[in-house]
Image (cartoon, rainbow, N blue to C red):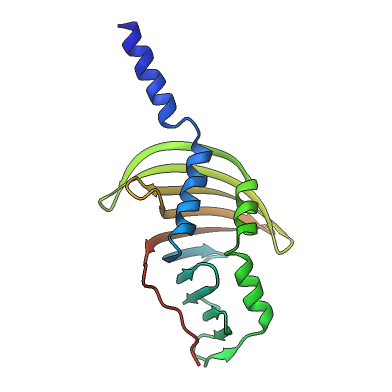
Length: 193
């Protein structure tokens, strides 16, 4: 009987033997998917708003909604449209800044900033079986240090993140961002003009 109890304990320990490695594998799977969409709800400074983010790794990006309006970045350039306004060309620095968040260096920095990962178990998320992790992270982005605690939901079947709930603090401000992520193999992001 003790053997079975010991075997069960060993199995449960190896099932989540390295939650940090499992989170990093999920992030890598997300990047390997090449294109995804995140429907986001962001709460900060007493405001709550929705944004949609489309990404095609390594160089296409579209963000729509929210107080800053819409942004598109492609290899051909970058464009911005304020709420109620028209599309205008953005400086090349916008394209360079956005591209840095989709590169290998940023992923390495994100991984290096992880200070703690805890496996929280499994949860059904709208019919999708997920493993849930709590990820603690500190990073410096564009000279600004931020810390966050993220509940990361990873689909059991694909090994990719499908939801993130990020509670972050930067420059004395706190925010909560919920991202519901879908993978879109034929996603298109094109210049608006």
